Length: 279
Image 1 (cartoon, one colour):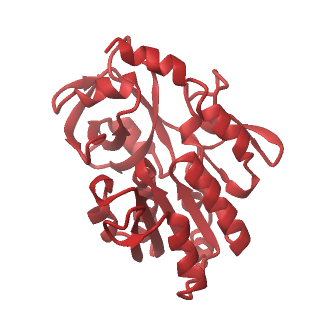
Image 2 (cartoon, helix red, strand yellow):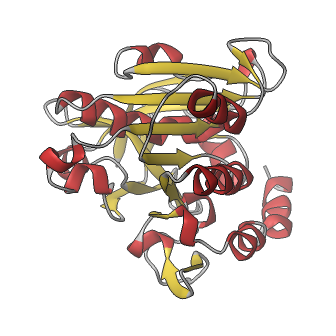
Image 3 (cartoon, one colour):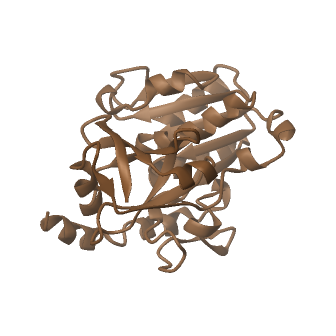
């Protein structure tokens, strides 16, 4: 069992848990994920790691209440215990495994949207700790659902907030912000990491391909089992079949078959709707 050290809501539908998991904390790296079950009968939920503290033996996850499993988790509190907290799984980000001197030569921008803001954080934090600056763009529909702004102020070289409705920061989607930075404000980037909703990542990749910026995306949204056994997270990358949970979750976004991936992300909506009826 894995004790929940702290539990808080970041907005109406997204909550943050700090979980006691010493073995995971000791081994994990930015970009990896864990499989979580709230109880012995609950579904397996793959969640990208948001932060970790090796000394305290804790791992932080950020969760959006979408399906039955996450709704059950959202009702837990500090002191409760999760049945399973397995990891780290998946491959770490290339930025933390590549030669650090080569990484330092890159001009890096992260583009985060919605829940995707959480898995961006450990990568930016790790880079700062190793002397690498990175710009960060965070997008949200409005100010009320924006998450982790204060955390990013402490690790980002430059932080750009943009909201669809203009209620905070810049106005417009993350693609507009990125395009403005490059074409109107003279920013230069050669490496982009984009994590967020599938449709957002698709359009970021269309833009960065036009701008000539290498782009990495996370295919976590299509993961189900997290071990490669179920096959639900199959995706085509440069015409080859990859499994997000074992080969990824990060891939070259310009080589992903986005139409196929987006169809796959909606495969289990009917089953999820039925599961929610029982809560």
